[in-house]
Image 1 (cartoon, protein in one colour):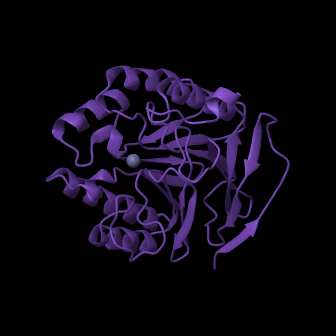
Image 2 (tube, helix red, strand yellow):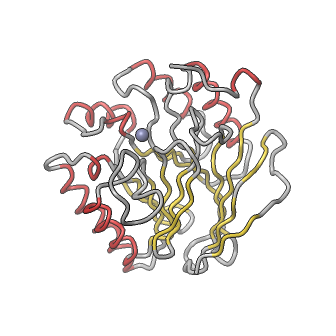
Length: 285
Ligand SMILES: [Zn+2]
């Protein structure tokens, strides 16, 4: 059973204000250690005003570095134009100022709606692998390249599928709780909703979710929608978070903080960045 409840507590950092929902997961195994991690979405330098996006991303890094967190994930669309070398260089310069590990997932703006050899090579050269698994605080964190499901690419999609199933099977064998991290969420409201710009194709969605359910996935963190969307699939929370570039639901710019307590319960809350007035409103591109 999934428990939703409104929650409030004193902010850990005075420069941040806080809003959001807490979400408890009752079934974590003992292997997940108490920890805190952060979900940043769609830094997308150039989407909400280039200089403003950079400044907000910098402010997010500074705020996160001032907190006691174990790692950070960025759920794709790192830059608005994945072919813009200056934007990639600026993104790299800022992301490298994190004082904790930061794991990146690629988005459609980074590798294209349908990736190509060229866009993948460009991404991998700039940021490293576009999908990988890493262990931290007792979790297996699986960074997915959901473009291979949204816009399949012969050869690469099959390799990504095989890797996905293999990593999940290994996690099941060792009873390691898994966190999926991607750009696209599988769906926004219901698992059988029609395919739109903001979700995965039905066929891929069904098999990916079914494998997640069978293999100890505890949460799926995603971006792309530029708003806060909390849903779930058979007890697995699927959490899309608002961004630092542009939000379509009126959410303030910010990021989401996740915590795992001594009992292994996972909770999260959205934290708005405290920003100077000129950075609080998006600009036209
Ligand atoms: Zn996107």
